[in-house]
Length: 130
Image (cartoon, rainbow, N blue to C red; front, side):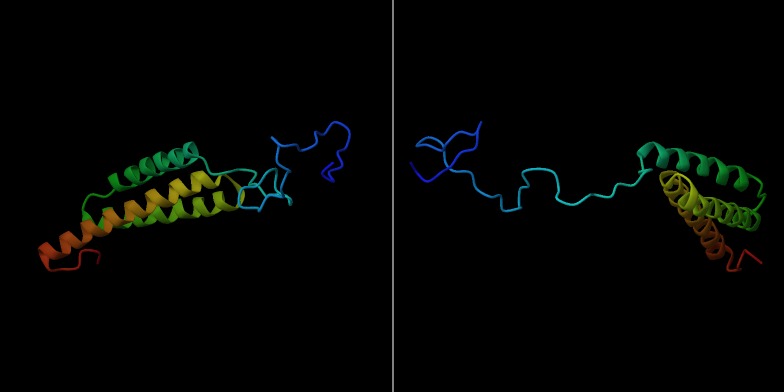
């Protein structure tokens, strides 16, 4: 014999079967040795898209209340601030994916408002917000 002592049901390594080796850990052979934490409400693409679409409509409705550049900019800042408060609440108590969509679209809406203000400022040479 080769010194291998098989337990019942295990085959003895022979000339065609090499002895089993301990895995190095680079390619794990089984489940992890310690528990893995998983988020109970993972961020999903649907949640992000839902938050983004809702925030887009929110900012659009508030932006339409403005009748000139200063009022458009201030309505967008107010709507974005309220949206970010909702996103903070969603991060803490709700769906984090929706909060991500809200935050991304709010940042985009604020960027558009800032660009509109900058273009008006460059054209007129007068700061348009006050």
